[in-house]
Amino acid sequence: MNHLFIPSFSETIFPASQLGRNPCLESIVMKRTSKATVTVQKPDWLKRRLPTGPAFEKVKGMIGRDRLHTVCQEAKCPNIWECFSHRTATFLIMGSRCSRSCRFCSVPEGGLEPPDPDEPKRVARVAREMGLNYVVITSVTRDDLADGGAAIFAETIVETRHQIPAVCVEVLIPDFQGSQEALLTVLRAKPDVLNHNVETVARLYPRVRPQANYRTSLQLIQRAHTCNPDLPTKSGLMLGLGETAAEITQTLEDMRQAGCRILTLGQYLQPSKNHLAVERFIPPEEFEAWRKKGLAMGFAQVASGPFVRSSYHAKELFQTVKA
Image (cartoon, rainbow, N blue to C red; front, side, top):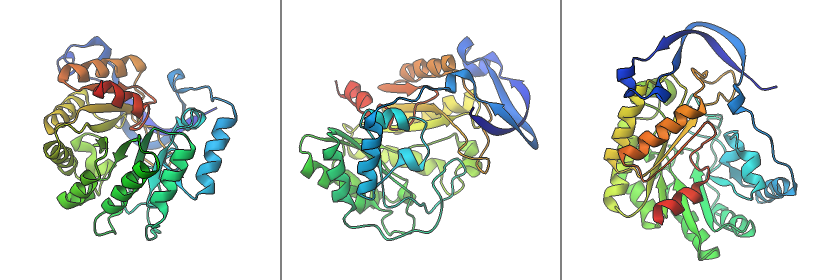
């Protein structure tokens, strides 16, 4: 049985005016009232049947053989069984340790090593062996590197195209501390999708992403869109960290104004009791209401659901936007 450690709660209900009078969004929001922890069972909609079969072990074996990392493994993604079993994965470059300590993420901080110059070739080789024609590449945040790792991203894009000529490449990049030149380095390699996650609403940044800046993330998306308006830009939010419906709406408006075209919305899940607690489990029907709201706001495509993650079904989202 799966359990999460979360605080005691009191109930607060948003007024209908704050939710745009959408009954699917008029739901209870939990707020912490004490530091005590209780063990709470996940709701039924967060229970999944794990797929079986040899494909999972084969993908895991190829990744381990080439000393690669995936965000699926390092970030404890709940979709890892499904994705590996369907021979897909999101490659995590520049190591498995991060220069930041975001309180929602299971990737550990510190112990950084120099980037492996052979890693781009190994990523491309494994992607080719997996038979991928759509490759998603992300990284830990490397504030210790002069360009934040932008050159490694660019080299991995180029090498992947060299080994898989017809491939499409999506990159999920960090904020590069606001460096426009680092962003341009990635853009010059011509990814097919440029993804950068805003992650949460502005008010929660000091608690959730203390080493990041809300406006810096929006500016990155806006710069990418300005440099190449035809390049699909993508971003995502975690829900369940204590954000209000009004704050979500404002964040979506900010993302659209910045030029974001593809949106992902998913449920935050606490990786361990040392990470931020889940403030609320959002039901599937509310995620569906947000999906419809996002489309009405002008996003070209919206993936919204409890198990949605930034690169979940990335190929399908891209294909619908390009169609």
